[in-house]
Image (cartoon, rainbow, N blue to C red; front, side):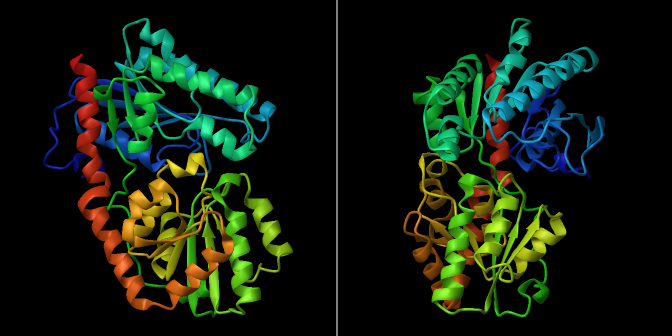
Length: 410
């Protein structure tokens, strides 16, 4: 049985029968992008014909293929931009490919709606010609790009104002907005001036059928007593430098050489963080695993005694839901993170919270949690229960279908 056939019993499997949906995502390939893939399967499971346009990536190089009934079309992209010129190249290339493939899909399969997943907030440009033909436009709000720009470059200027304008235009043209949390919903209503009844919260909930708790593998600990795990993108705003400062405090100042750290993930700052780890004398204590297949990821998380989220407290991270937190909770892992607003909303008592952007306090929270097995077990159970009863993807599917039902009703 295909995954998209396994909808919650509360969902009407014929709710979208006869509808055709085109999803456009730029920053990750499908099905690697878990949220977009889960949305695709859910919409297909409700009867829609779904096509996806996405970039190519390692392991996802086919120009086009059909996966579990979903038509997937991929295009090449230049390397991730790390400057204004780099971003311009990346976005211009993406828009050209997305427009080309959208027209191809329009004539080959047809579609009633373009479902745009940001970043960037430029996909409305692809959708505009089709809106003139009567097609709908859904904005799936994954990232707050003006805040992301400030987090990356610590400034506001011409490009920040440009991002604000693109965001406003995206909201303006959207027939329905899908927000990943209540903070983003508030932005859609207040900053985007959308009617509250056109904004739906669909969280990036983990799929409990996919994530598995495996037997612990002591090899990840490299002979040490404890393992601290991290999974996520390694970029400037993810706070990996603060995590390394915390590790340095643990190893050098607290003289703790019994803790191994394994970092799963890739991103534009990975090489720089690896070099910094060597420079700080931490190479033996910190393993950079890179982007890993599910089996390795699940093995690391299953073995970890504590998992961490070192995202800086800033206007972007405060209002964003981080998938890593939810994945830690699925795996019954106690969490240490800085006190970011949406991080606390997600984890509640499954996490302890360090002082904002304070690596020393972060380090001491890790050490204290490792020394308290009862607190670790309690936090793990709380997190898993929250996922099962409220935050898993199964609880989000009816909300996604409701957004589409509203879209097609008007």
